[in-house]
Length: 128
Picture 1 (cartoon, rainbow, N blue to C red):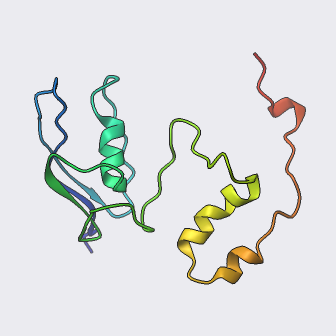
Picture 2: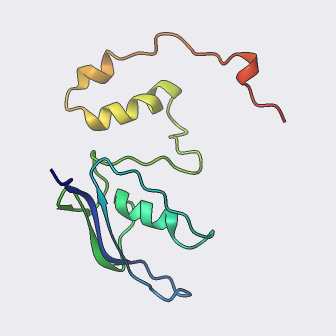
């Protein structure tokens, strides 16, 4: 059985004042693992931000599961290159934030607590 298209990128461009506005079209199939490799500053992170719904396109459209991406959604997640936490929240509340977005039941996040801190073994710590 042929795989269905998971992410459809249709003539997407994001134009900044200094760029030429090239378009990208691409289908990513269900269960497909894709790597985007190109020089720094070419738009890899911008494309991922557009797919996540964090940025708008200049032209074109993106569909995830046949639905147009018009903003962030529960069906997509982002791992940022920089720290991405709410500095005013306690650690546990930053951890629970994703659960809060995914759950319609407040009891899930209310009853979910950190059981025990995890400590890395000495051999796993980073040495400079």
